[in-house]
Image (cartoon, rainbow, N blue to C red; front, side, top):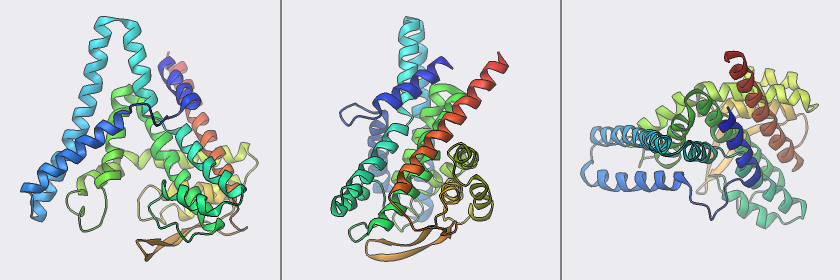
Length: 314
């Protein structure tokens, strides 16, 4: 529990500086190299699916085994070294500060009236086309991203490190990285990325729903519409192509009284997504701030629950 608290504080204070080496980059290099090799021999749908399964299993097992082995070796050398590395691994699996910082960059640019720069900054955290987005659409894109990643990048890693420590938290991070790199439904990754996408859906099933609940509870303490947050989760949580992402987005939409989803452009082609929430007010740039606070509120609540469970179990 002390290690978890230290990791959370470290993430909150320094975040993820660009200059700092990050394990996810190594995981990404492994995935890229493995895919490059496999695509030379795997051509048919069946062989691509088998190669994708091999990629998923090997990546997760390698990451879990490497972190476990490093910590085990460090434990035999020095307790201080073990605890230090344990905290570092846990810290690198969290992204609360990074997520908050990216949202705030875009908010500040819009607050200064620099929509062009805000579009460019938004393109760094979303997959849709941003070159023609106006303030309301930029806000929607950022709110959706922060809400979705409150589960993927913040509460889910915390949830798994509470269950299985740094090795399980980093294994979750590996699954998340696999999904972000190969878990697409397009022609290139339909078969190769199938296993990675499905595994990501499975491991995020419970964290996504817990995130929605904790965001709704957090909205109560923030003076937002917590009743509407809960009801929107129940009503619209499934209104998403992902079986999980819609739940935290619904919690945020309900709490803020806004509508998410709708039509986005991807590579110039319009793609419609089911709407989430009801438009009780127009989207405003301050909704980015409110969604960020919801993220921190849900984060603190889950950390408190983990602490209580630990204290009771002791």
